[in-house]
Each structure stands twice: as C-alpha cells, then as structure tokens.
Length: 363
Image 1 (spheres, rainbow, N blue to C red):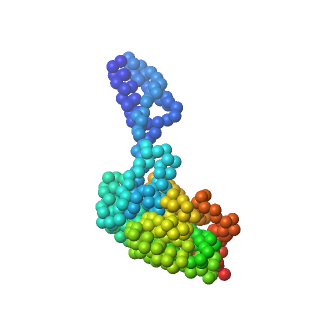
Image 2: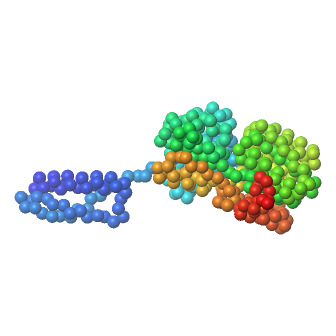
Image 3: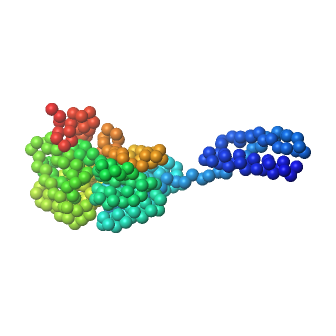
C-alpha cells in the first residue's frame, strides 16, 4: 500500500507539472487515468490534478517626454493614448505605464531611456525627434527591449538595428484643413504662424497650414516665424505679438510652448488654431479648432507586434484616412456652416488623393 500511494503521488506531481507547463488553467477539470499497484494487483483509478496557476505579468511601457503630460500638445497626446490603451487592455494589472516628463535636456532623456530598458520594460518610447541619435546608440545595448520614437519614420534598420519602432504624424493634413478654415474666417486676410524648430511634424504642420490658407484665399498673407525652441514660451509669445502688430487676426503654431502665443491671441481678440491636442481648454473664447493626434492605433500595434515576437523595424503614420488625425471644433465658438463645409471638402480631397496638403489640388 505504501509503495502504491507513493506511485500515485509521484504521478500526480508529474501530471501537475505537465499541466502547469501549458501556461494556463483549463476551464473544466480534466480527469486523468492512473494505474496503481495494490497488494500486487493493478488497479485503475481516476484523479483530477490541480495545476498551479501562473499569474500573467503586465505588459510594461515606459515613456520619456520633453514636456508634461498636461501640455495640451505633443506629450499629452501620446500619454492620453497610452491611458486609453491601458484601459482597453484591462487596467494597470494588464499594462503598466511609467513616465518621465520635462525631459528637454537630451542627455537626461537618454539616461532615463537607458534606465527604463535596464529595468526590463517591454517597450520604451522616446517621444521626441530630438531623441533619435540617443536611441540609435542605446537600442543595440538592449536587444531584447523594444524601443519607439517619433516623429520620424527611421527605424535605424540601415544600421542593423532591429528593435526600434518609429512613428510620424502627417501633420500637414490637419495643417491644410485648418489653414482653409483660418483663411475662410479671417477678416484682415493676414495670418501668423508661430513655429518652434523647422523640423518634424512642426514643419509639416506649418507648411500644410500655409498651403491650405493660400489655396483658400490666394490673396492672403501668411507670415511664418520659427523661434528655434520647443520649450521657450516667451519666444513664442513674442512671435505672436509680432504677427498681431502686422495685422494678423488668425494665429496658429506647434509645440508645447504655444501657450504663450495663445495668451497673446486671447489678449488681442485674435483666433487660434491648435495642433497635436485639443487646446480649447487653454482659451475657450479663442481656440476655434484643433488637429488632435490619436496614437492609440499605433500603440496597440506596437504592443501586439512585441507580443508576437516582432521587436521593431516597423514605422507608422497618423492620417485622416486611418483615423489618427481628427479635427476637433470648439463648441463655444460659432464656426459658419460654409466654413466647416470647406474643411470637410479639404479633408475628403486629402483622403482621396485629389489634394496634396503640401501643394494643393492635384492637377
């Protein structure tokens, strides 16, 4: 009897380990046929082993951002996208989010990226085009970690790097649509654009806005100023003031520093057109509409790719057509119906290819 009991116990342990190795607990108990020896006679019995339940670890995402998660611009758009995906996945138990904000200093940002990778995060996002060179050096040091950065389409594949995703907002599309709207609503025919650095989605947005405005009103004057900084609020306010003094009644701009320009627009009764995130809350009586970046689709695909064993070498774009770009109107400002119709027509033309947002209608 003692040997028979030991045999049964051993078999139960073996079957339990085998089931545990499957990685999941079956919905219905599974009976297993076991033969034991009792007093020299074989005896068949049925047992139901209880496999060990292995808790699934959450998918871990870390993001390094140049500004704050409430900047109403570039950083907030990605952070809000992460929160939306986290909720869809089932909360913090299924997806962990860590972040570092205010990383204007690139060496500090690089240190944060490297630190998150060393902690074993599954995906580390360097959310800023200024972080590209750093990521190019860091990614090879952590070949089992997935990284992402934007706005760019370069995954560094040419350098033999295989664990970097890249993403870009085709901001010229929304820029064109808002340029049409601004030109439609402008009484002076003069518009001012406050850009940060002439690169990335900021330049795309500015170029698209200028094109849309001048297509809508060939006699319009669109003045451009680049401050050379993503973060200098005072310089952005100064650029807006210069445009106001030149007669502009419609202003726009890109980056987290636009809060300074929006303040100038508000003080002078001008209208503002935002990008990257809905900026209505910054000045409800001033912001007419905003181009909003919706990164949720990009985030979900990066996570799914990582879980399928694809660590990088994929690039993504946000467009009107794939739903990554959305024009959000301020319900507190009365936008004429024919102005909205002109915007709708512009968006439809961009989507069907009859309008190039950087050149205008395609001949």
